[in-house]
Length: 193
Length: 193
Image 1 (tube, helix red, strand yellow):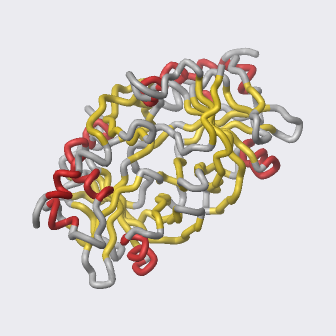
Image 2: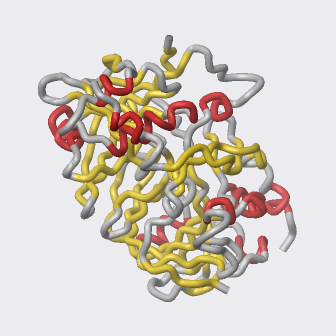
């Protein structure tokens, strides 16, 4: 049997995405968002939703550019700080000591210490209510050289991204491999009915 | 140092979302999508992207309604099957033996056996290229009665959702709790600079 919880934002897993932008003076900022994900394969696009009250919202509207930076588990503290602090009050890069690097393709910085960085050009924004959803076309993905793309551990096991559990307000790590996609379901495909 | 991978859809974690709809005859369908997530807190909204070629795309356009169903790890086979099979060729509910239940608030079915179900009304769709992004306002969330909301294990540990790793094409489970959100970063907030 099911119970009804009402209209809520319970969806699992939610990612932890650190959005980086420059302000009008060219000063870098970082904020954390859990409302986002890939939204198109061709052209490759990501969606991320921000509240209008954030410093990053104005930067995105001005520069039409942002990066998505995926923190590893060992940067949980910095990722959390980027979510609770405001650039209206403090310089987040100075406080964390992390490095803002200018992107190659767009006018936004990425975080050197985070293992994966997506350089994105804003192609649309959609006013939804409390949040505005920004659609960014992925112009390039940067990845730490140390991460092996083939053989051995898969990328996700090497980068160790964080998962956000909205109900309890905890970050989780990625667990064990469960199955091969586009494969385990073939048994059912072959089944006669 | 970083290496450049080009314009790709690498974002971690991506969720495994099973989208359910009715067709014009009222027959239920299910398909799996990894491109989606929450996109607004108020009103609560989810985004999910489908290709035009899917049977579900036509259903969504017709009914302006869908559910998002989160499979547990033990339904990896069914979730994978929903992604590789097409309703153009077979009845996916008949093949899996899963139960399509009519939603309370919208004209779409949800999957009884999956632990969390979001009833969504389409409020916008955005043509992005290969994918069309549907924005659904969450009208209600259904959850298995057996899942405890308070005390003990958090919801995510009880539902055991799947994670999609786009690079290797594997499903992963959720791992260990890493930190408390809106808390672990406070050390940095207090730090003088």
